[in-house]
Image 1: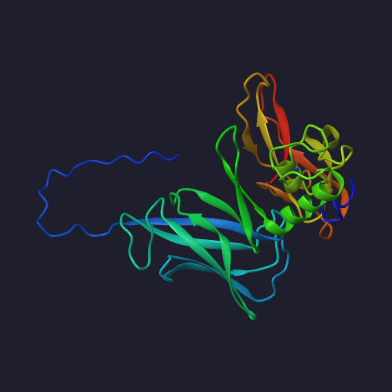
Image 2: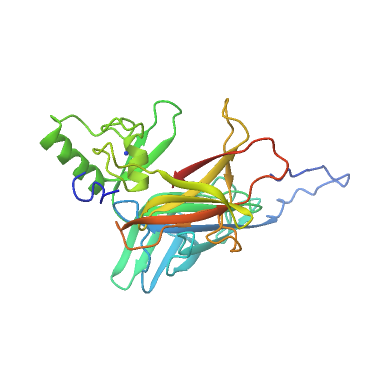
Length: 290
């Protein structure tokens, strides 16, 4: 795997009931609901986790500037997360709490000043641990024509891809859903993985997969600073992929995803360990860049 385009080159069910007691004419009080925890990371132009911010703070706030939650930004952990927001959730919005579904703006403050993050945060139920990725630079949104999902890609990355198209491929507009090098991986997936969307030999690939230490060991070629995860399904006929927790060592802590070792753009190999479902007739695994 080479340096990518960087050098030039895709629940809980809550039951409610009506009290038999009559209510007065006064407004019902705002009921406390809980806290929605969100772990997240800041990433740069090439989808790489910014590992160390020094002294910085991220604030989740309303459009009027009301700060609902804030967190220090620290060095990225094994999962690539470098902050944790605790957002109070209530049955009605107050100056100090949100309702489920409310959208918050996010601002990164550093000794050099405040930076408006070009991504928003949607508040979810407090029974969940959410995750979010913020870009620190301008982004452009694209809608997947197949399923309608919207993704955001930094404009600096798009500019480099567009320059390559103009210089070497006869022009055209950058399309994240196309496959310029015909390696079976769309351009957006190559952006996530840090591989080159114009090189058919460069794509995210599994190098080895075997039983080891009582687990299944999966080795793959990584690009430093990128985050990878595993999902699994019990059939390949209309599979329903579900997130699968992994370990960096056979006896290590379970992680939702893994931040690859090495500095930004470095190529190497990462081995992760998966615990198969006991007694399952079959289980299939999918390696993903996040």
